[in-house]
Length: 287
Image 1 (cartoon, rainbow, N blue to C red):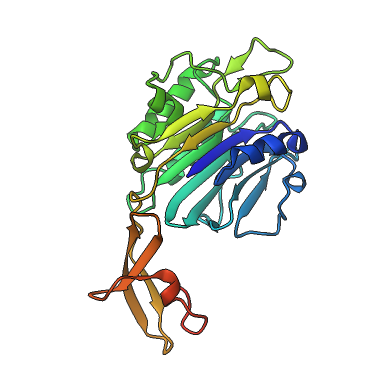
Image 2: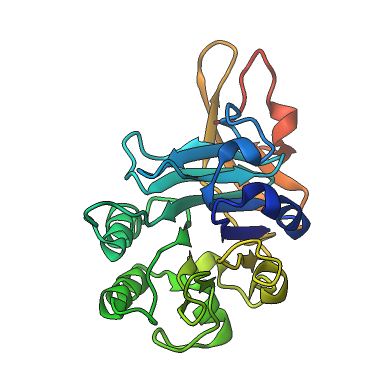
């Protein structure tokens, strides 16, 4: 499964060809005009959108076959907490954009800290991924507050994907994800994806977009961060249940079929069958 986070710097239309070429399953976007993304903003099964005080948008889009479910009826203004499910995939995504306020309160680092405090560390929740433009890095003047956040995230068993995969220390001088147009010497690694242990696999790959393309063609002043995770056979969904035709609650167990054929559901002690075999309009779909 491929997850991409990218701040498009309000050049949404110019970035779309490059975004489509990345062929992501889950896309986290910042500084976008949702009307330019090519999907109807009314399709709430596959996308969510938020708006910063500046009027700029941020959002989540998932490919066909996946679906989004809201996780918080009163989310933080800079975060879209959703459950991503389908095709044997299941995780909670806290998609965020640390946004600018005037005056700047809460600060960028306080915004990430609030997301961590609210959503990270719940043992009853599906694996959590935090992804987005944090507007904070180890290269900035506020680096101590940022590094404190990174430590707090690690205390909840999440790791910065790029730093973990490439063996960098939290305060290392890693490749930039942001190169300001007005200050090209100001470069920061502020676009981050924090991964749970279920995603920190031997085959997990983490890369950045090509700076010669993104910066060279002036698509954006941010590079996309690209995370590829071999999830097949590693996700274990929770037990599921459904109601029978007579309204009786019928309990089922569930597991992920490791060869990639999908979710299998079984009545306790029964044979394994596919979810599609169980679900009918009359009886209702598995919940």
